[in-house]
Image 1 (tube, rainbow, N blue to C red):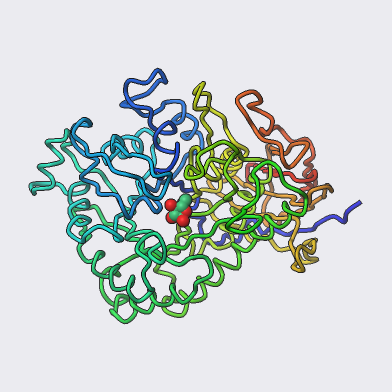
Image 2: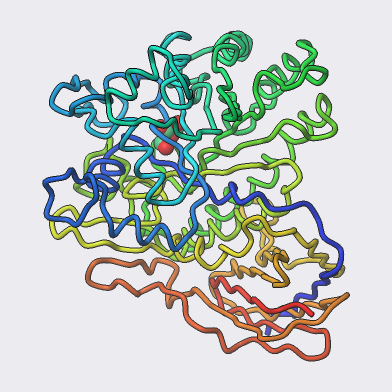
Length: 508
Ligand code: AHR
């Protein structure tokens, strides 16, 4: 039997608040994410409001998704927002050059996106076009969406049926400017970010939270360039810096970018390689955070991981440009591990957006193109089980005797991951056992309070490859977990092999 993992949590020592926006989402005009996923058009047989699928909305409402990033991704830097307003029949058609070279009819535009956010009860995060757009175009988009009172863009909005402005805080200044967003150098982008940010105005009470397009993975020099610019501009002394946050993107693959590995067919070695990659998110956030600390020790500028998740080879027979992939118990553990890491970086990480919500990459929901059936993925269930961490105070988890590790490609992979938080008098502990074949017991000494009415939930399956399909909707679904006992101040949790468990209770 494996040794018990011992942990200590001081219930009365609250750490930084876990920003609910780290449970954020991302929807790009890519494959079947928008068209067929979120949006089926008003004439569809699938129940909809204004073309937006109601079953998708209902499923996502249960997750309490805090924000939705749109329209890309790479698509954002070739998107011209005026193409997506006005009568649908008059909207120009364009080619989506990044994603499958398909025609985009622009039927899902600004008004449809805002309607979707309203239905979801989520905050919009608009990603503006720096790569192929102009400063004027972006400036007028901000005006169109957020300005109250008279102005040319406001009159345009009114003609299109919307009297009142929307509230939009999150505004992205381009996407992956080092790549599909313009192939710029860090210095070049820093210059562009400064120009674009200047003309993205705050109208009335709408205060934009401008997010500069950040680094690829571990490119700390990129982060340094953007941070240095803020400090050179003396932004710490003016009312608000030009941009409030920097982003970074990091995906998890098990192979190479030309052969990323299959979503459902993988070996145990590939599984561990995946978890090692996912665990590097900790190194990523630590590294970018350290650079930011040099220029911003009081952590005024946020770090935004606005694309993360698994990226596998597409499902056989599907369009390679559509990035459609299945989602297994392995994906669920990638998600739960990311969340533990996010919770530990609550002091700097203000937002994270999984890529992408429906039918693309590590999705919450897969929709069947033929039957229209809706499948909730294992990743969906992790988001749901972890919902209570949103805006909760993080609680440090100490493991004085260490965490068991497994050597993967010569590097140590911790095989147990735990995080905890408290909110509104409730404790939530999340535990992942990454070991593919062995169960593990965890004993948590809960100090400084007691816990009652404990509810434990488990997500696991016979195999790591298990996944949900229209024929087997609940092959991987949460169930009540019996393997939890609370005695004295000790919470004992049994974690079967490759499982994710949450334990919630009332604090006294
Ligand atoms: O999420 C898919 C793509 O990955 C996005 O469009 C791009 O930003 C990233 O490279």
